[in-house]
Length: 292
Image 1 (cartoon, rainbow, N blue to C red):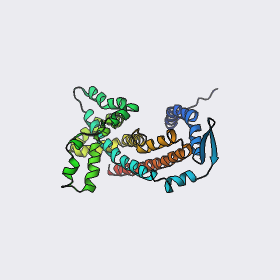
Image 2 (image 1 turned 120 degrees about the vertical axis):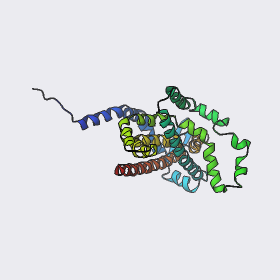
Image 3 (image 1 turned 180 degrees about the horizontal axis):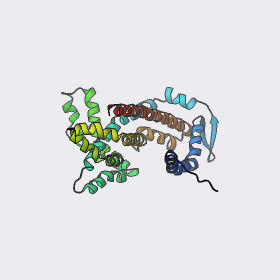
C-alpha cells in the first residue's frame, strides 16, 4: 500500500516560497553567478587589453588601497551618493505613503489616477531618464528663475537652507521614483480588514490614531519592501554619480580591475545600508507589536 506524502501547513508554505524564488535562483546561477565571481577576481588583478584579449596580472589589494588612499574622486563621490540616498528615500516613502492612502479611498477615476502615478516608472527610465535629466526636466525652474537661494539665505542659515533647497529641487525625481512603492503600499492597505477600523471607530479612535495604531503596523512588511526597493533603485540609478564613475572607468579609461574593486566596495556599502534598514525595521516592528 502506497504511503501518501502529507505536508504540514508550514511545509506547504516553505515549498511555495521556494517555488517563487526558484526561477530567479536558476537565472542567477546561469547568467549572473559566473560574471559576479569573475568581477571579484578582476578586482585583485591589473587587466590590460593585449591583442584583443585581457591580460591579467595579480596585484592583490592594490586596487582597494588605491580607492581609499590614492584616488581623490572616489570618497567624495561615495559620500555624495550616500547623502543623496539618505535625503531621497525618505521623501519617496512619505510621498508614496500619502499617495497610496489617497488612492485607496473610494472615489471616481481611482483606476485612472493609479495609472497616472505609475506612468513615470515606464516613461522616465533608462536612456529616456538621462535625456530628460540633461534637458533639466528633473529640476524645478522656479529656484533658478527667482534665485530663491539668495533671497532666503538672509532669513535661513545656509547650512540649513542648502539641504532644504536640494530636497525641494528633487521633488520631480521623488514623484518619478514613487510609482512602484505606491503600488506596493496600496496592495498592503487593501489587505487591512475594514472591521479593524470599524472597531476602532466604535472605541472613539481618531483618524490619526487609526493610522499609527492600525495602518502603520499592518503595512510594515510592505513598507520594508518599499524601502529596500527605493534604496536599491537609488544606488543603481542612471543619475547616480557612483554608477557614472564606474561607467567612466570601464568604458572610457578601460581600467577594468580598478572598476571591479570600486564596484565591490560600493556593493559592501549598499549591503551595510540594507542591514541597518533591516535592523531598524525589526526594532520598529517589535515596538509596534508591544504597543498593541
